[in-house]
Length: 243
Length: 231
Image 1 (cartoon, each protein chain N blue to C red):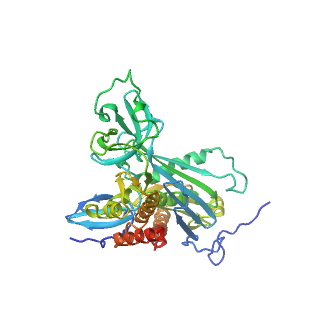
Image 2: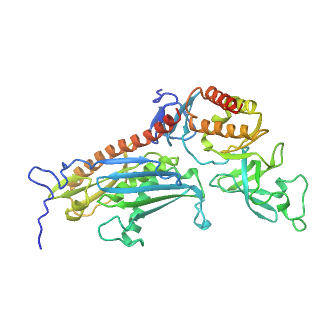
Image 3: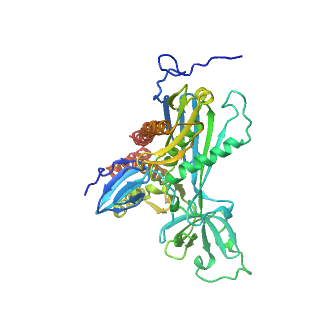
């Protein structure tokens, strides 16, 4: 059976009606989990995930403790109901890799040397997956880390850029990721102008790559503003609650 | 040399606070000669020191801090104390009791048992080992009776107030004893249990409104209203 999926139609619009440089609707809520030291909930299009941060706290396998800085541990996990075909709860190779990749995207931003011999645990639980989960995960985890009061150089914002039906597009949804030609997730610290994650799945020419990176950085800067607004809103709600 | 934020402005991690001949204070970091915020909080500029009063943060011990801890474990010559920090503290028998005891003859649980609440001082703490406490000193030792509450350690300076103004007001208005631990724990003991309740509410109010001006007056007013309700 061959079904024609039109990824980009005659008007230049994508499957969900977006323009190539348009982000999905993003909503970030801070402090949603009472038990965690810091937490955030993000909805990006249909992708929904929770990020929780615990720490700095005592490391229990004592031999893992680092003498001069905190140990950042990260777990990316997809709930069995997050995808159409039930996903087994056991960590898959993809989840293990994404856990590592996300940790490496967040680590450069944190001032880990302030808490030697402790652990900072980040948990990302995907509730609904529609593409861009690792980027949304980094974005939400960064907000959760700030919510927990963990000192950092800057927030990390992330967004994926891809090539779909020959055109470069920003913030791929699941269909675009599956049927597109290129997927390039990028994580960026906008105040430091520093990239902390850059992956490429597919082939791009030199010019395409430079344009795609530029688009990704612009998207990250937009997401950065959303992260900051969500954090400021939390501060202001705390204040107005008591008045 | 520019300062980029107004005093007590809400700042976020990565936000540029000041440039030039300023010193990087608490919760900030310096890159070249620019000072940035490292956390969410309120910017504070005093003399030439730029710092941020964090909204949330864990307690990192400092030598000399008065802390309220809970005994969690013991060994023949020491106790392990939870001081509400990512670092577990140790209290050795030699630093707790005025006279040395023979661990073979006596069980140290006689003095402090698991679950006991103690007030002490951080004697030693550096980056290579966990903090060590001492309870030798005036006012230190086991706490009995009263109430123990916990607030975010970042709000403790506000609870104490400039030169103790806030905490002394609470002690006076509610005729109670209050011991404030730098680690966010507070012990209250009043002659009337209702007054203890009011004190707890007052402290929670301070925690919630720490970053607003005129707090001392508002808290005093609240205490007065609550006391009147009791009559």
